[in-house]
Image 1 (cartoon, rainbow, N blue to C red):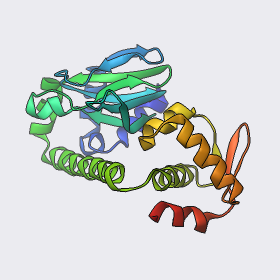
Image 2: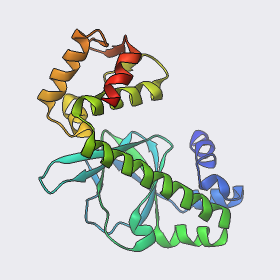
Image 3: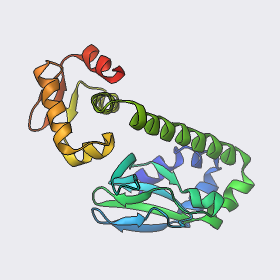
Length: 223
């Protein structure tokens, strides 16, 4: 519990509240445990909540008219998610579900807005966060529309590399999950990964993907 309090106190937006208010807010949260693939909210739902991830991983994924799912981003431990419905009372443009067993804290709209109205710094931080999220979503959509699949795959691998700060990427994802991220089929992803390996860009093992030629991977991202 002490770890939870420490991480919560340093989370963007919440950190702008006085300590006594952060403690008060934590006490007002509802706690929810999720099984793998269990949904918190579906695309089209009006879901006016703020979520804080205690453990596991939550996915924010959009379903296209074709029926294909596009993963926008993952939410991991100690990250917060502010649903669109909190601010406009309208439906969600994507779905939230657990990628694996997860635990989250939830606050309803009225509880959260009470704090934001009383603390302008927290409200301003919320505006910055929403703008950052919008820019990130625009980059993803732009990439899906204009960047070839090989470039999108290279971008994803570089993103994983940046998160791990290592040339070794842990293979804790399936081909289906990667295909969802780059808007392709598992077969295409498999073929491209092996092509990258044949070109000496990657070394693929059962447990990891080792980046052997960073410059070539960055070049593939731009092509």
